Each structure stands twice: as structure tokens, then as C-alpha cells.
Length: 376
Ligand code: 3HC
Image (spheres, rainbow, N blue to C red):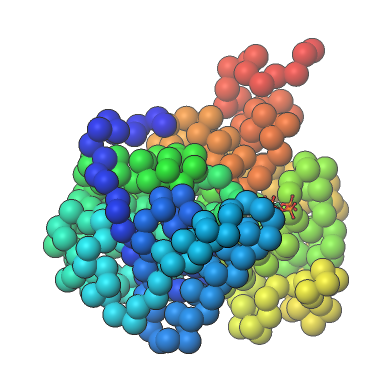
């Protein structure tokens, strides 16, 4: 991967700690156990959360067994590798500890301070933050050089991308270890600068922000929701929001708004959806929930589907240009890779930048003529 340090610098990982036992943390614990085949210990604040997290892993292992992906022996071994602990002492001999707790800088700093008190000075501290600054997170650490961003995508077992984020202090050995672990997990890693929301979340939030703004202005939700269906994306915007969770989506939007207020808004209606506690605008049977949809009503200047499509693609094109100028990744192909592997951007379009080039939306082009062009 562009910018990855010499792989010989990587340290061996023989035990993994996961802080948090929520859905993201449990999905990660399963993946680490399955691919690294080392003990994985989850910690959380109370026994019932721990039981739920470990229970999720066991249930997923049973599904793999049912599909014939693992043998009965492997299933038993996998289950025994994943355990829960109420205290962080269990991390004492871990070489890699990753956190997936609530997206709050103070909470994450507190967690790492507690972890640092029990682990060795060389243990890698990884954060699965979806948008917060690595450099700020590492500021209070005794050894900030071992902090690295390790950002997975939902569903963790399925999406092949890992964004690896280097903070101001992250050293080469830590980064090399992160890339080696990513490879063992069979993910494709992309090195990303410590910039707000990194790559995929920045672009998905840009996308979602334009769709939601159109709805807030009065476009019927179903019109905005399906305005980009022609692209062949795996999910519609509100379905994706539901997969990720509206609270996470709102949080990333707030982070991006704080960083770039002129381009990223925070929808009041979205905040109402989060406050309502609903999982999203869809019911479990994927019909629209009229109460949730009503939260977005009241706008007075509707757009057509074509207008929504234009504003979304135009905004994505502008944002990608800014990200490349900022050096968030090495080049346009890294953006393409991130969107294909992390958000299921249609593979047959050759990537988002060739698509924006070909369709004439990107002015000037991102790539030289001939790269992923269609025959004239
Ligand atoms: N959990 C675990 N496994 C799942 C799953 C889930 N929620 N959803 C699907 N799968 C598995 C299925 O079991 C199946 O596995 P199998 O091949 O072993 O049987 C496999 O995925 C394919 O399932 P389907 O055929 O049902 O899947 P689809 O073709 O409908 O694809 C999808 C499902 C992969 C989720 C696809 O819709 C997609 O790519 N969506 C976009 C997801 C996306 O953009 N994620 C990024 C969000 S941003 C983020 O997470 C960052 C964070 O910081 C907010």
C-alpha cells in the first residue's frame, strides 16, 4: 500500500484486547479470533453487556458452522478464543488493543489512559474511531507513538477495507504492525492522513448530507432516497444510515461540520430522528415508517430526482478535489479503492473518480484521459 513502512518493522501479535462489547466491538473480536487465531478478550462496564458481546460471537460462529465455513473443532476453538473481562487487567499480556467505545474524545482518552496503565510500552493501541482526531486522542498518552487509527466498515466481516490512520506521533513500527495485522485479517489497507472522518465517512457524509438537505428543503423522502439508484450502489442513503445507526451518522456529520462548516451541515430533522430513538426511517420489513418520515416534513422548495443527483455528484466531486489537495490519501486511485471496498461503490464503474471524469462532472478531470475511459 502507498506509504506503508517496511514490513520487517512489524511486531508479532499473540493476544488482542477489544475495549467495548457492542456490535462493532463484537464483530471485530470475531474477525481477530478467526483470522489471527489468537486469544481475544473483550472488556465492558457490566456483565450483561459482556455476555451479549461474547454471545454474539458464539452465535456468529454457529452460523459459520451451519454454512460449513468452519469445522466443529474450529468452531469450538474459535469460541474458546473469545472471552470477556470486567477489568482491563486482562490486557496485561496483549500486544494489540483496539477500542470501539462511544464516539467521544474524552471517553476514548480515558479508555486509553486505563489501558496504558496495564499494557507493555510496546503494545499497539488502535482506535476504530469513525471521525475523531488521532493526534488529539494521543496527546495525553505516555507513549503516543503506539497509537494508530484502525477503521473498519459495517458489516465488518464483509467490507474488505481498512483505513489505517497515522497520527502526528505514530511511529513506523506501530504503523507496520497495523498493516501486518490488516493483512492477516485479509483486509485491504489504505494509509490515510489524520483528517476529519478520513475517506469513506467524509464522502458518505457528503453524499448523505446533500440527500438529507434536499429532503429538509421539501423533496419527498422517497424521491431523494432513490435519486441515485441508477448508479447501482448497494444501498440507498437512508438504508445505509440505518445500517450504520443514525446516532453515528449524526456524530460524523457534526465532526465534519465543525471542521468544514461551509460544506457540511447538520440537519435538525436528522437530530430529531436520533432523539426519537428510532433505528431509522425503515421498519424491520423495510417499509417506510410514516412517523419517522414525518420528522423530515415541512420543507417548501422541493427538487426533482435529477436535481438531487446533480447536487450529490457535484458535491462529491468538489470534496474529492479538496481531499486530494489536502493530501488525505496518496492519489485518486486510493479514493476509488476506499469507496469500492469500504462502501460498495459499483465496481463496474471503475471507481468514483473515473466515473466523475467520464460523466463530465469533474472539471478538470482527476485522471489523465484514457484511465478507465470508455471507447469513444
Ligand atoms: N453482518 C454480518 N454479515 C452480513 C451482514 C451483516 N450485517 N449483512 C450481510 N452479511 C453477509 C451475509 O451473511 C453474506 O455472507 P455469506 O456470503 O457468507 O453468506 C454476505 O454478507 C452477502 O450478503 P447478501 O447477499 O445478503 O448481501 P448483499 O449483496 O445484499 O450485500 C452488503 C450486503 C455487503 C451490506 C451491501 O449492501 C453493501 O456493501 N452495503 C454498503 C455498506 C457500506 O457502505 N458500509 C460502510 C458504512 S460506513 C461505516 O461502516 C464506517 C463507520 O465508521 C460508520
